[in-house]
Image 1: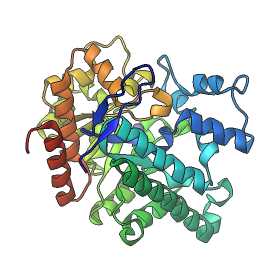
Image 2 (image 1 turned 90 degrees about the vertical axis):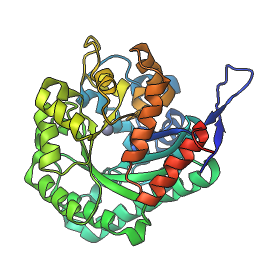
Image 3 (image 1 turned 90 degrees about the horizontal axis):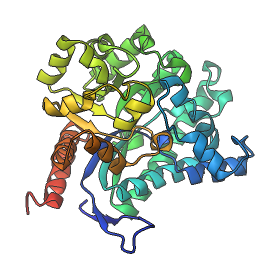
Length: 371
Ligand SMILES: [Zn+2]
């Protein structure tokens, strides 16, 4: 999988090649669409566009520039989802473009989250029509996988999927998700784990520990399905403890607010639980006030946590990996930290052990650590 991609900097007379040395574990596929693609699809579908209906007004609406709260941050998904929902061609294209964008950002491997149920037609999401709903769940997943495979062939970056459930939503969504992820003969190992996340109206982490979620993660664990959970972003340290003890999380998405409880902080550090940190997102969602110094991510690095750097939702943060590193550099971190983060991510990814060893070997070679 070793390779390089040309960095597309239009302002530069020479476009340097970006080595594929990064690993990204926390990025939402539907939060990674190009603004240009959303605009094209929205126009074609006659969707109501913000402002004057221009591309620039759409981009201004989608990209959050100043801190908000998680609910308003996520509200951008209304037009993003409307542009791809029930559209298998658009979904395949989105996955393909996500691989190209990852490669251009130097990412050799990423795990992209998706919730199949918010990509299928509204009228089949209920419990009433099991057959049609399940077929759609499989179809949208198949389209994404096709895009990832096609992208990998063209750009040498590999993307797998993590199936996300949404807090506070119906039990049959959880059931479908478990069936889908357990069906490896269908997805060929491309869905490597499960997660639970939020939509604008379910951004309160309290509903994360509801019975249906506990049962889902219990069964996923017994089936050997890998688990990562959004926690400690809009909620406190107890949500992180709940994710670990009740939902059997192996990795935590975000987790910044563990700084508010020394016991939880030390547990995550001592047990080397992987924290998928998203610097810009943490500020823009209001999870951590920009005035909080040092930012928890800086503390995590200084205290040698098992931590990685991720973009979360590049469509909304307006960032790619290098922008995230630039922000961290402003906070005093350096390339050595980013290399460490890459290896933390590679070791904590949900690839099977032999593929993981190959990935680590490939990155080591590209860095020049091994021949
Ligand atoms: Zn996320």
